[in-house]
Length: 553
Image 1 (cartoon, rainbow, N blue to C red):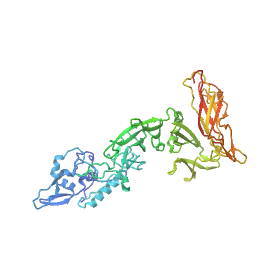
Image 2 (cartoon, helix red, strand yellow):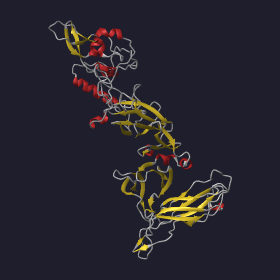
Image 3 (cartoon, rainbow, N blue to C red):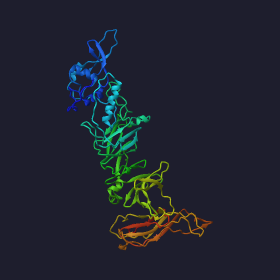
Image 4 (cartoon, rainbow, N blue to C red):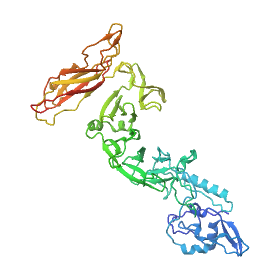
């Protein structure tokens, strides 16, 4: 039997009882417990297994509403002693529930989250094949699909979480979901099949076993989130990064996250610029927002809080990075040096903004984009190999049609030249030191510096191998140019007191080189400029100076 399909403007009304059935309504009823044949009375005292939707219509001259489940009309048929009791449908029992506006539980069919229309038709067809007693309706449903899939995937609490869906719906209707702020999570993973089971194990439309249990899958929505770009784990929480904020998903109790027990807390209003700026150092999370670089960590009360790393340090530098370069930024955590490295384009070359977690300080590397001897070779990215804790760089050879991977690069040259050609000069300029008083002129008479000794031998001419150098000058009164005449004279701070040569080695009995130098100049504030010398190493261990201003030190 096949009934005609007609459109229904009242499908969203749970009290709506159609007189003529539609494909949408048949599907919805089947999805809320009407998709299993039941015992019905075909004539007085004669019973058969048949379609409960048809029986409802035959007896009541209309069809069930979206508020009704088939169980309302199921009762045991009175029988004599010799007959086995059985349950059958009594359509008259539904008369008391007509105009009920509570929606019935749905979820009998398991469908594809993204390709909803096609998978609904497939699920309905599979159910007809399973139960031949059901009436076959012509099923032509809206496409109702969302393209793209999950752009963000993360493991947490023994499950897989999916997010980053688009909000676009192709050929949907008023009931089509927007997936933009939806996060789906799988059942607790025991095998590969569980990866995509983002639904409960039991049938939610069944009378028995319809409760959500802790190991079930499901979904949640963060109503405020506009576009979810990244997820990461911090302590016992799953951190969700969206363009307009950051949220933490965690268990609603000490037991931890489960399908029946979880909570969502907002951490920050500062959303993320790019998913590739998020990185963990195992105790904290770091990311780039529009207004700066942020750190997420636990405070003394165990709450996750957000702090700005750039606000009182490199805010001007960060603000001057173009938005498009921030969006192209990549990041790695380098475990050996405990540094976080954000790698981003800057004009024709690249910059590497490095946060030293041990010192809460930033430095910047400039990396030349291509090999001067072979301009076809170009830097393209940064990563940390699985079996290494130190960062590597991707080098590609671009062609007209595509980019072919060529090799990888790292910092291992002992001539301190990028690509073996360009001097990788480095410098440090300290912040202005005022001694908490900007009105008094000051002097810094002596500077003591300590370096790691790098010389480890001599060549055939007796010249030390692997030499170091550190060129130093003082800068006064916030001067930024030699035109101010507030720059001190440049001098060499890496100086050996004595060198002892022993059969080709360079050994003076010390691992540390210490020098004391006199500083010229005076001003209300003082800065120190340290720079490298081409072809030489420079490993600064620390320095000490005294700042004198009358009786203030």
